Length: 132
Image (tube, rainbow, N blue to C red):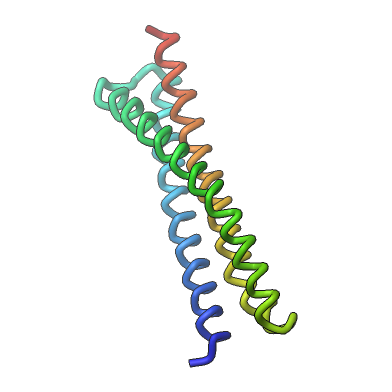
């Protein structure tokens, strides 16, 4: 199996994973929008409040973990890109750099999604505290 095929399949797999994560993100946002509208109408139940607090805590940990992973992964991806450029001719290296670029984009999108969800949950949590 040629190595170009492997890098293309890996890129496609990362793109499908990114699409799946985007759809999951949209579902999370819909839930958060529903909770925000309930909060504005002052109709949150104690279960909703507990859900918000636990998810806010969970996403704060996920954001920290994702930030750490990005800090570690970026130099590694740069190193891989450099090795690919040095190992292959420029045209072949560009084919393989596709995976590195897609992986970098995936990491950044994942980081943004987690930050957004954490931010929204944190805003709702702060609004709940103000009401108490």
